[in-house]
Length: 179
Image (cartoon, rainbow, N blue to C red):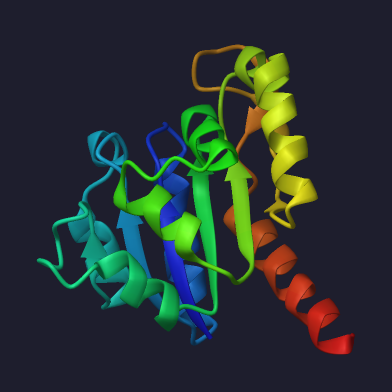
């Protein structure tokens, strides 16, 4: 399987490194797209080392060959972990102002979103509306989980554990192949 791992900015970006490692262990080919803010938490070199695949950080990484289009033709699915409230909102309204959001807008395969944000942001009406809209469009939402958050608060907003994300992606493909 060919996967694009999208990583957006949040403390839980460190869990995405483990997710990448588990994806490779399953023999999936992985290419990574990182937002600018994700790079404040973890470096592209980490994903390059873990996946042995390219890491894209800008619409201009691939020159003028429209990298997001070639990626959307290459990939079987995308998982964005963590996905922030900001990126959820952009995807819900069809914004294409970054490589990741451009890729998602062009991609026609399964998209798994793994939210991670403060409880207040997760429970905010605009986020709830955006998640409902994305579910209606067929996006698969994994998490978030309840628990201790980076700021010390507790509640829903923790990114699901990488092992759980892999299990849910695998289960989704089993269900798709059974139809």
